[in-house]
Length: 426
Image 1 (cartoon, rainbow, N blue to C red):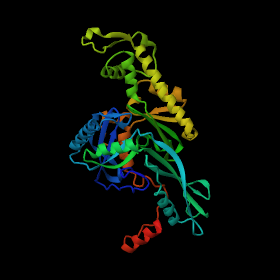
Image 2 (spheres, rainbow, N blue to C red):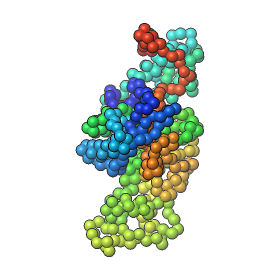
Image 3 (cartoon, rainbow, N blue to C red):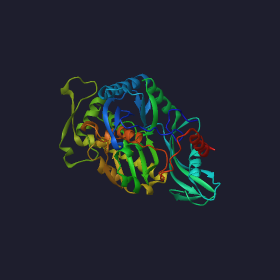
Image 4 (cartoon, helix red, strand yellow):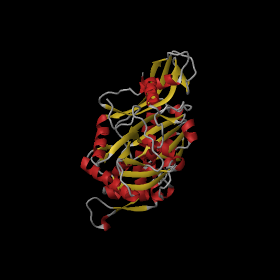
């Protein structure tokens, strides 16, 4: 049973008219971001409202306190609405947790004519829309990544070919029902409708990648506060995604425990002095570490920066090793090639790119939002990639349909519409 709020192959993409607005909500473990954008000429989008707030009630991408999360979401949305000068009713919501599962399936339908026609393709896609999942899971994405004809794979456009069975190869992403429904309920308590859910690494990829990377193969690693999620793009589409429940907040906790300092000070130390890779000067640089329960500033410990880096690096190595393991186990490591794009708020520590290259043995670049107008400097970095990607996702007029040559325009009359419906679904 698929959750009504989930965006899947059964839901038709909503066209956004020129001058219309779209809204994106990125609910993370450390921050909540709301973007409101207006559609301009030639399909360009410009952000007109921005709101971001420290996240409360969210842990590892899931809701753990409904009231706290509702307050944080409501505050971020209100700030964006105030800046944009208009209210929103629906939002696209990112999903970073929920134990996502990614698999490729093939749905086949018989071909009745002498060759495969537009009608056969429509029937196959209509049949795919009836894909169902178990009661304890929600269907988040069902993305056609290719076709098969009588079992032959690698076909981009089957029309005109001869065969008895036409198959649609689908990349299906599901998530645990509980976290998805809790997040939807929390957004609903803010008097907002959920237009759809989008996996964070999918949105981050749409935001940060250039077309050549999407076509040739690339891995996107979105490092958040409570989760690190990853996706693989190939031939212009996302073909795999996954998530692990570790992120920047776990590094902060390690610092707080290792240096016996409050969490707020641990976050400050990480931001000001933290690094993913050691440097020669770390032993000589001394930093002040306030102690838990000590009110007087003079009671702070004085430790070398190397001690701080020695706490940060092992946790980050663990995260990248887990990412490498998941990628190798998925079978998409070769498809992904040797290109990695690193993004997300937790990816901004100095030396992160070098550490990722060392552990993953791949070429790594930092990713930030591209092709989104109206973003101020403070919200145009890697930490806002997923939120910006939600806007890019909303602008894909046929987001869950394969790229084919244009079909004949349908008749607009009553009988024309009825005839089109009969051809597509019967």
